[in-house]
Image 1: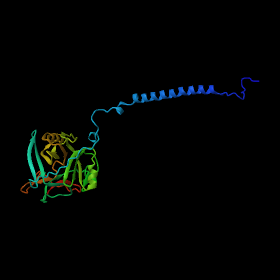
Image 2 (image 1 turned 135 degrees about the horizontal axis):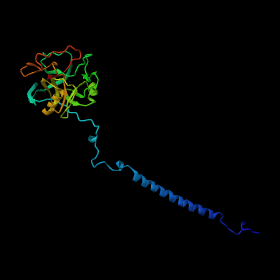
Image 3 (image 1 turned 90 degrees about the vertical axis):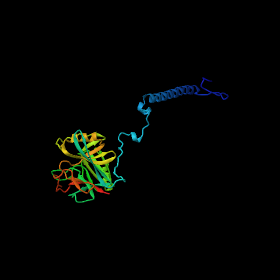
Image 4 (image 1 turned 135 degrees about the vertical axis):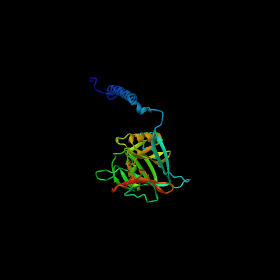
Length: 291
């Protein structure tokens, strides 16, 4: 007796075939939905991606020279001229009725000097006080490195001068790697008020009138420009810029000790009869010795 569930010996029946076919159809739709979802995600990624990641800001290729924070190139000057002897070339000029004296050391070696300095040293063709001295403790104002030895730190003044192996650079910066380089390589470095930065006059707070001196870069050479009259700092800076000075930092002005030696060997003081060396331990000069 059979009830539809029994199987005869000569009969073959496939059991469960209908269930597998239904499950196969469901898996096929599931794979289709997954594929469509992946395509949709890919489209969204492309559409929503920020433009600055897919398109350049401009057509100019990015190079190291275009980096905003790149360290500006440093220009080193030595004032060497094989057609001339070691001397101080002095030029008198005027800018807006301000009488100026330009002193250009030729074939000399610049360096810093600390201590009392006499004008009897015939090898020194030009010398003038460089960094300011504090009134309270007699120490140097601002960062200062003397032959590789750091003597003072501080960023109160943005102008700087660095000297390495007889070559000089002058500039204006809040921070400069030249301080550390001078310490490591036995160089010289000092800070002072900035006077001219990239051809433009720099304004300073001091409002007193006094004789002024500045260490400058002009026409590819370093020089010292002095005014014996009492003038304001900002007026002096403007005069330097109009003179064609590219970079400049102030030197100690007023009646500060300083002189130059002419072609006849005569000593000429910046302030005749009124400049005497101060008796201070850290009194310092920038000097130019004959090569």
